Amino acid sequence: MTGSAGVGSVLLVTNPLSGHGRGQAAGAVAAARMRARGVRVDELSGTSAAESVRLVRDRLTGDDVPDVVVCAGGDGLVCITLQALAGTGVPLGLVPGGTGNDLARELGVPQDDPISAADIVLGGTIRTIDLGAAEVADPGSGSIESGSGAMGFGIPGPITFATVAGTGLDARVTLRANRMRFPKGRLRYTFAALAELTGRLTVPYRLELSGVPGQSVHSVIETEAVMVAVGNTRTYGGGMLVCPDALVDDGLLEVSVVGAMSRPEMVRLLPALASGKRLDHPAISQYRAATVELSAPGAPVTADGEPVGMLPTTFRALPGALPVLVP
Image 1: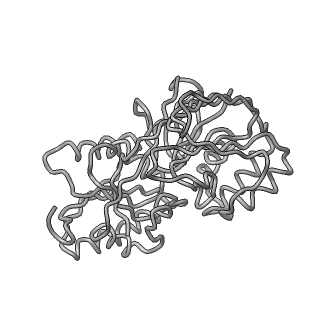
Image 2: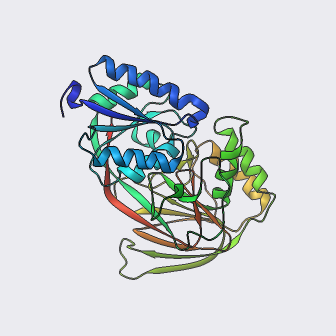
């Protein structure tokens, strides 16, 4: 790498829909900052998730590979970019501009400050983190409505994710929130949750955990649950602490099971979840594993807030899969 702080060229990925336009605005400020420091910035914005994946992949397999790929947007845009970026060895830079920005929050990249974020891209430290992969058993089963595109971005194979994969109620809440235009910010998730609570809450889940620390055999859990979240990071939805003990570089995924509870109990938990507090309830349990096989009837799956498909799905930790620039 050459140029300012070792970075000579940047591929800046944007999405006009990220954060209702905030991502594109943050990207423009960051691009101006990087160009002012002598860095070449090439901008890319696909008309669909699948096109964005293809365009990024083309740049990373051509003769002019950028030193860093920068996402100016939220976790959804990062997830889209990861489908082309993961495993290439090219570092990821973050300019937060989405609704949740949970990966940036986890890694200490400042929000609402694109100039500082650009400076981290040019002079930060490279940290290697894990990713997760979600592979739907039958990609053609069921359908999910989403404001961000088709299930799995319309591309074959497992979906790579950086933060949390949700199944059940939380996936339905995320998908509903994605379709909402009011209110903005994290309140959308609270409103979406209240709406989803009017439907069926619990479904019978089957979890098969392997690569569990201290165990040489698979663990099988069958239980009625409201939702099961599989986390590479601790939070989703703009700071909701759903996988409180997840570590982004331990080679494992954290599995949070919210067991059967009444609607009033769920309503009481929502404010604590929305405010980022650790949930304390006897129906909530956590597990850690390298591979998680989940099945439940009619349960949708999201990853980084994006639609993946329906259960059954296998989730795998991908240790050390991504270099990312951090403060």
